[in-house]
Amino acid sequence: LTSDPTASGLSTADTHRAIEAVWRIESARLIAGLARIVRDIGQAEELAQDALVAALEQWPVSGVPRNPGAWLMATAKHRAIDQFRRRAVLERKHAELGRDLEVQQRIDLATDASAADDDVGDDLLRLIFTACHPVLSSDARVALTLRMVGGLTTGEIARAFLVTEATVAQRIVRAKRTLAEARVPFEVPAGRDLGARLASVLEVVYLIFNEGYSATTGDDWMRPGLSDEALRLGRMLAILAPGESEVHGLVALMEIQASRVGARVGRGGEPIRLLEQDRTRWDQLLIRRGLAALDRAEGLGGALGPYALQAAIAACHARARLPEETDWARIAALYDALAQLAPSPIVDVNRAVAIGMAFGPAAGLELADRLTTEPTLKQSHLLPAVRGDLLDKLGRRDEAAAEFQRAAELTRNSRERTLLLERALAATREIPSSEMS
Amino acid sequence: MRYVLLLPASETASKAKSRGGEAEMHEYVAQLAGAGVLLAAERLSGDADAPVAGFILIEVRSRDEAAEWASRYPVQWTQGGEPGVAVHEVTSISGLA
Image (cartoon, rainbow over all chains, first blue to last red; front, side, top):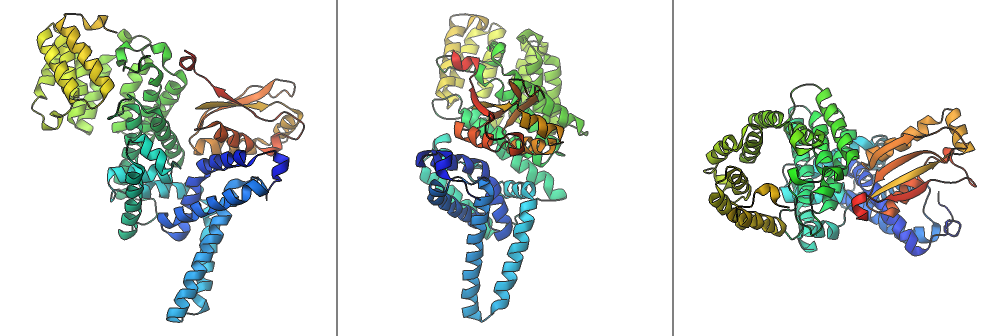
């Protein structure tokens, strides 16, 4: 099974880096396969970690195996069998159940193990659905998914979300305990449950993407590592669940949004608004992938879901070579559909922007003004920022400046605050917004 | 980070293709897609004298991960003594600015 390390010419450091790479690639499948056997993702992760430790001990001497994933799985399964044996012996001593239990468990384990090898995709789906189970809080689902499916370490998750490692570790421990206590089955939901559970999975993936794409806290406007991770999870899901339109819709949305990453931040780290971005810096490969994913979502038939509708809106921007070529009337219509399907004040704010662009700032402001009493928007910078923009376009500069000022006070992102304060100042000085950088 | 895997054009690759070894290649590409790292894959030439037979573009978290994927390239399509899969990081224009 193993190759000669001297023949490969790998140093111990090289081997450790190779093991880390193997772990990135294999850990989710390993944990998923083991969870199917032991029916507990916490225990499955411990077994996988034991196999990783064995690899760290053995591979620098024996060399990296030709099929490292199979090596890790075989090692973890042996440990699982050892655990079953020890437990069986203990139970035999206590209850005098005898050999039958151990033999039966070993047969069950062997049967499950061989079946698991044939169902890697199904196991992964089970793992994703379990890690994103609604019994867990959003934070717990995100942490568990990144750890179990993404293969990120606790430290990496902590750095990505600007929290301490202890906080993330605690979240993961609690999440695993909650799943065990709630006896959450390790399975892909079926029937009526599937829709709600899939929505929970997609929500987690999009939460991760958004935290990377528009960092809600801290000094950075984006933390692209998280967006990349979410995209990877989304692409995996699209392969695992090809018949689910909303999965393709979410992938399309993320691909198209990610295509703008290189254009939405200036040299000084300042955010650049969509219509002012240099579109030659948009990633055409990701746009093509996004449009293809949207085609797949639409091709599955039926009405588009919320993610596919948002992707269709993003596609309108992606298809426009110049800002003035944007089909704002179509975007406004898509937001109307989205508002009916998934009503939310945030969607209404965006609809106001689209209507303002399609039919003039007065029409947009009329809708935006109706949202000023919306309680959920009171603490958000979004509505004052949009109202400021519409008022600015209507030449009501003092009111615009006040709105930008208010938006700056409400945002938690320092880069965005700077941008909003600049716009407030520009409005006061009567500098047209089109002349701002 | 994006990496391009340049697939070697060789006698072995030509033979693998001609004996219907497409299934191994499809399986390899499917593994990349299933892991969520595949961005694009193209065959450029079936000619053994061509500089490369094709390329696979992947997005992974490190060069080591790219190298690990390259090491999993179907053995039926390469053999000792012939050029193996070359791994190159893709630098975007904005990355050069």
